[in-house]
Image (tube, rainbow, N blue to C red):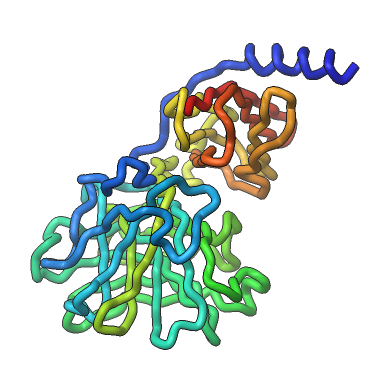
Length: 344
């Protein structure tokens, strides 16, 4: 009976093939052995992000491949701060997520994180520039910090500063150095208001979203951030970076998806990673899982509440053998499944 059920399930999976346009606008996993040439240096004369063998990272990322990204101000030229950016200065309403190596109890303040709405129009110069950043620093204070920055390297004048405190987010802070998933969603609500959703380990942080009324950036590039108040800066490591275009606003019902959908993964066939896009017409508990041809679960990409919107998840199949796999999106009464091929 189990064999008959499995066979019928496979036929069911194979016929559920609905394709939608891709929402991913940038991705980087460093598996070419070099960093994407699209990364720009934010501070004049600063070091850019580099691809390094995974073996050189402080710890191996289980969902990573053979390479990882390294960002560091190795000469302390900007007080240990290094920032790279990508994408157009006119980008608006997007998310950036990445695996980020997080340090615990560094002797000096040490942050790594993500950047959104960066003004890259005067990048690689001495001009004052703005950006927003989500950064993590785990010590006695256990801070996940979100702030805006007037990033004049001589002054570092803050626009605003917010800490997701341990009391507001119990049990979400690591006690040892480890790889963690960080994500920011940013949406421009109107000409003077920007809103930010912050996630740590795929969980939306308490008191998120944050809203900023500003005459500053309502568009901008995405990026990566590294800082340590030392002569060599923090050796920050990043992997599986995905930037996704979002609906204009979760408050603007005309821009919320009108239906639930699951896109064909891209690329397909793939090796070792691929991106899966899906959209939700309303919020709810979402499960996105991957199965082998015998129906055994091999990866759980999402298992949490998600608001209405457009999303992307990255599957890294480094530890899986070549073959046919199926990924299934379940939310409410919807159950959508597609087939993909891992070709090593």
